[in-house]
Image (cartoon, helix red, strand yellow):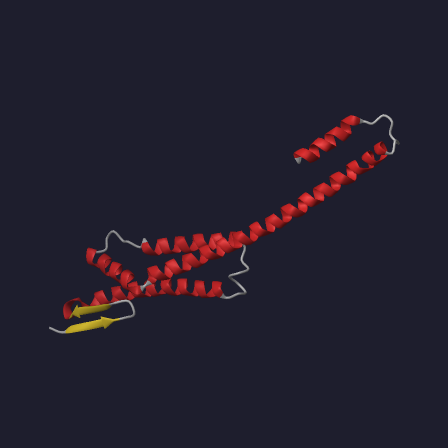
Length: 177
């Protein structure tokens, strides 16, 4: 009997003459699927590392990308046909293990998570600056409203001060309403 050795980037198979036909075709189909997923993940990371695309994406886009990658990889792993023979499932499992696609998926997901964290920190930094500017603007507006009343009162220009509006503005400033 003849024996054939089938090698690829993900596996080495030893085949006997009677099992070589459909068996090799099945393994080739599995490898095509595997290589497509590996290449998809590789190209996605390479595209994100390109400064014009990866760093400038919005938080929403990055989260959608993370979800899409998780869903695609989950769909890829979930390709189990109940009518397939057990040894085909074992072959697929071994191909997945030896191909490095799991490491490529983890690398891709970690990079997306890193970009999400970096984008969130930029947003938080911007929010801190905005909060400081809005507090300063609120102080200036409040001061502009109270200053004329205080000036007139201290110069004796107002004999009967409307205490209620002055009190409401002062309390609103103190309580930061």
